[in-house]
Length: 377
Ligand code: GDP
Ligand code: MN
Image 1 (cartoon, rainbow, N blue to C red):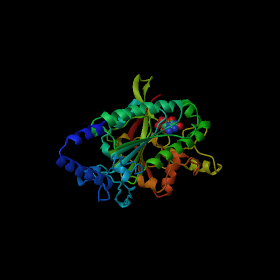
Image 2 (image 1 turned 90 degrees about the horizontal axis):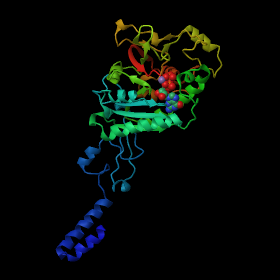
Image 3 (image 1 turned 180 degrees about the vertical axis):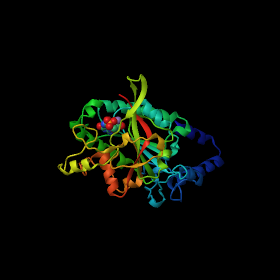
Image 4 (image 1 turned 30 degrees about the vertical axis):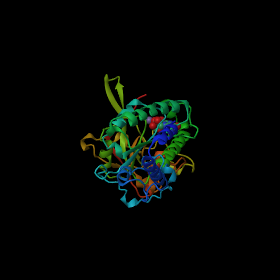
């Protein structure tokens, strides 16, 4: 269509116009063949706009990928150099423009989780979100609900609400148990297989999303529906390699007739002589679990260490951590600390991670008075 119109025009044009047109065509062809003499490509203005933007689909996910139509085909794949010494993890991440990766394994989607996430005041252009969802009926429903919110926010949301980038993974493992109901999840005989599946899901999510620009990783479970909006700044200020918030649950107390709260996450603990003795008598593949009457460990649980008079900043060292709200310096993961899906010192998943971090020289800590809240089923 366009071509025909062009040829009609040319037939009627004067020789001068034809000459100018031909010259223009040559310029356009030359421009397409030699997009730019600079290795980055494009003019200096567009280069400035592209700064920090990935130019190759395999570039790190902390950078958004932008394709330039017509130019990419002729460009050689880039070679990226990163000076890891410049990737800091400091007490003032906002001031130092540090990138944070928020990672969430998600079996169910809760709108309250999403609303809380969007309300976090840490600059969203420094936040990358990563999700992993199981390939089950429930997982499919959660994926659909999540994608709806993601699309709405990233496409139509206010500029300051949009996140730097978002990655959604689907799990390739079979789920360990069919039901996600709390009673089924927490049965002792289901725990080892379930925690192993969770560990693999966390590792898959971590290893596919951690980029060379990542300073921090915040593990945030999909059923954490309430945190302070300054969560990231508050926790980072402690400048700890591994730091857990205290996970509680709100409930209606029938005895007092009022809303109340109770401890929820028992995976944040300090070791006890009893637990260490128990572990000594166990087989290599056995795991010690917390919060089961059948297996009294006498560990000191952070869930019970709240001391309001000591303030929000009160810290305690930990030997085991949970993953509900856990801030980790990216260097800890880069050093190789991950979530063992097998018995590691008779510990598994997040508790095994705490042990591994400690063995690498990174002492985990917890904040007994800094509370976040778990959904109440
Ligand atoms: P609990 O609160 O300790 O009982 O543990 P959850 O069942 O809440 O699991 C912890 C986190 O992992 C939550 O964010 C869940 O939505 C998510 N989750 C649970 N099971 C799976 C699974 O099979 N695959 C994935 N990808 N996430 C899961
Ligand atoms: Mn949970």
